[in-house]
Length: 114
Length: 116
Image (cartoon, rainbow over all chains, first blue to last red; front, side, top):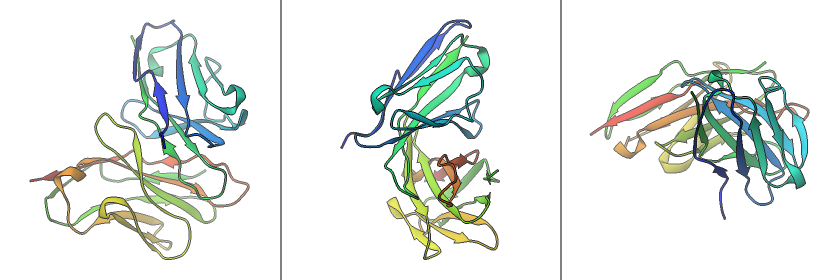
């Protein structure tokens, strides 16, 4: 079974540019999460999809971040325009429906904004 | 709101010795608790979880963790450390109530180094 995949693995962009991150969850996983780890600090929640619907986007830092999950399969996270403080590692995770089930994480996308 | 504390940024242990990585949490109601490990240049890998039942939970690679409700702790342990256990370890929590949000709240991570 393929795991969660993320693309790209690294991205270096200039302040003011746009970047789009992609996440492909494990097949059949309705739940999809985005998290971010900034500057070696704790991993923080951004948002949660159930199929194609945004269940919780309370962790999104501001309106420069836009997440979509068209068709309930893969998801994209767009940052537009990027700022220096957006640098960090963006993780995607997926899980099946049900209580107490672990989330499976992708390898992350390391975003550097210069 | 829930929170997780990993009081040690760095833990060093000699190969063959027992290891402990500490985690305490704060959450409304009963918790679901998780440990994840991140090896260099890799994503987070699930190690083990506590949902309910036996307070001692066994996971991958010989790791185990003990849930202590009175101390709100979920320390990760292994009887005999290997050099290959060297990695970054994250503790995470979420409330167990059915109406609660599903996202995990993570600690800041503990870098474990096992010395040969």
